[in-house]
Image (tube, rainbow, N blue to C red; front, side, top):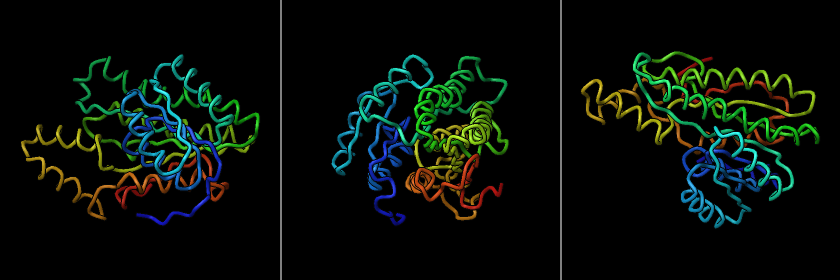
Amino acid sequence: MSTVIKGRLENRNALITGGSRGIGKAIAHRFIEEGANVFLCARGEGSLSDTEKELSKLGGNVAIYPADVSDRKSVKLMVDHALKSFGDIDILVNNAGIMKPSSFIDYSFDDFDRIMQVNLYGVFHVTQAVVHSMMERKKGKIVNIASTAGKWGSMHQSAYNASKHAVIGLTRCLGLELAPYNIKVNAICPAGVDGDEINTMVDYWAKKTGQTRKEMLDDIKSRSPIGRFINAEEVAALAAYLASDESDAMTAQSLSLCGGYLMV
């Protein structure tokens, strides 16, 4: 676990999409430790409620709202509720995302489109809904959770890679456009993070290659210079830095968090 610098986000209001589990939940946990109020959205109301109860025990101010980030009307209602709950949104973390591996030729339009709708258009919808209030106050931090998959090509995940390439491109453009308003926009690009997406890929490739699950896991880990996956808490630590004043000179960047796996 990394060392927490108490109070870096004291009394700041953070909206985190995909906040009920995995990276989003870890970021919410870290933000609360840093003094922030957190507003979480995700599709599953049950898992959101469970996360709210868990995080509230840390002593933080936690609010939730079930929403599908690919649904523009749902996003507007969610952001309106966040603004009503907290007054302002100082930090936006676009974390919600999905993956479904497939060879390109076998992707159905619906599957390819769904990945783009959530991973790319979700960022578009939520950011547009939030950024107006940031522009009015001339202050804000936006952290997009992209992936090393947004910086290179890999087989059997063209939809996911294309969506994350697009998120990185959007991050760069927004960083430039919003800099005059003192709004900083950056992306975190993790390599494999312990959790659902890695499990999905491992199961897919184990079945495709005939390897056991353990063999597939060991094979993937062996490709990393540090010999392991990234954990969600490490992503959360970088998100806390990007959300804090310490990163005020940084915008339009896409930071790889990959144990040396990728050097761009």
